Image (cartoon, rainbow, N blue to C red; front, side):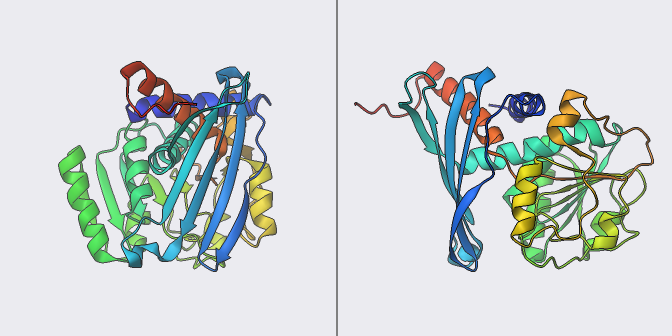
Length: 306
């Protein structure tokens, strides 16, 4: 499957959400340690006949163990009988749908001629966001920063070889922000935020996607934006009650409202726009359904007897 296919199916799911036709509660979870937690993420999208749940863990210290930081399983069920249809790994789906959600937002909030991307956090999400953004804006140059220089260097080499883009490694975060038309922050989610990015760094007309909530952004820098958006108000308020996202600007629109046209996206090429996508089950379920149907069509997977 291509990233373009995932972007299109995720955009369709947000269109259903914006029209009020998706049932999806905020994430519920349990916390096993200061740096480890589990989330259960159910959603029902009637238009796709898709219902299921993602069970995902995030363990911040796993990188020290040479293990993935994020792991999960996705279960889809039959809409009519409730019986399980498929169990699949959730890591690929999570990475792809997160990048796709940024790309959907960019369709409505980024300048269409955006050519330079700044990536702060050169892990899986940094890669998937770059891959997705290439589908919606004409990227030509990438500026990459990571608190681990060796990780940034690997990212630079991969971007050059895999996508043939011009790419440089930034020595400081400011280089990756000031030079860019689109900025993606995909570092560790921390509370309180380290607020590295300061006011005046994000250029006029730029679009920023906050994959790491508000971790990278100083309050004054966020308040420079003309339109601050999110993927879901209920989920944002859920996290705000837990101590995250305490100093963000007023919410202009949800991603569903932008896709539906209830709220206009970018209206001025000089606007600074920003979205904080918290990660929604609807995107997992829509993407997982695409994977399931493609697997059935191609005879992939292991079939289990009742």
